[in-house]
Image (tube, rainbow, N blue to C red; front, side, top):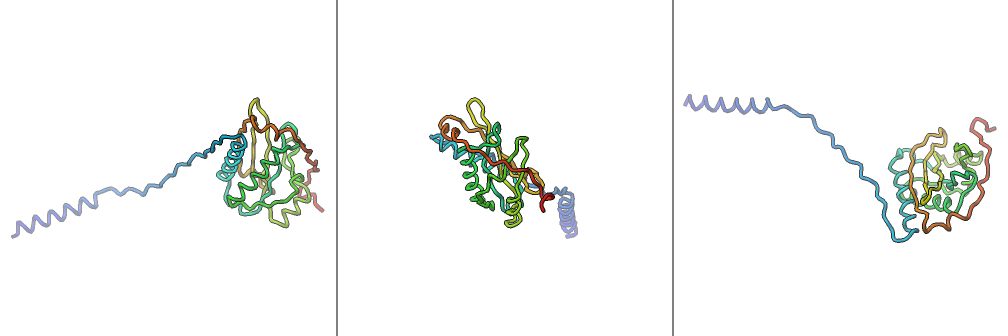
Length: 205
C-alpha cells in the first residue's frame, strides 16, 4: 500500500515538473502579405484605358492615409508635362474617371467646375487661387488630386498624386503607362489652362 502511494506521488510530481518546465513562447504577430494590385486586361484600347485608370485609383487608395480622405478633395485636369498650361481630352478624361473611381471608394469628392483655378506652374509647383481658398473654407477641402502626363515612343506616362492643400505634402501617389495605340483621338484636342497668380493664405486680405 505504501509502495503504491509512493508511485502515485512520484507520477504526480513528474507531471507537475513537466508542465512547469515547458518554456512559454510569446504570441506571434500575424503578418499579412500585401496583395499585389492587378490590371484587368481588355480586348479594346478603350477598355484597357479604363482598366489602367482603375489601377491608378487603386494605387492612390492603397498609399493614402485613410484620415486624409475623410475631408473633401477636388480633382484637377491633368496637363501635359511639356506644356503645363494646356490640357487635352485625355487629361480631362483622367480627371473625370478618377472622380468616379475615388468616389466609389468612399473618398469625399467635391465636383467643382473650377479645376482650371488649380494648376501646376511651369516649375511644377502646386498653387491655388483665392477662389479655391474660399472653397476650402466653405467645404473644408483637405486636398487636391492632381498630376501630369508625358509621352514616350509608344506610351503615355501618367503620374498622379494627392496633395494636402495646407502643407503641400504629397499624401499618396500613383503611376500608369497607357499604350498610345487606339487612343490617338484623345491627344489632339488641347485647351489652354488659365494662368493663376500664385497666392498663399498669408497674402489674403
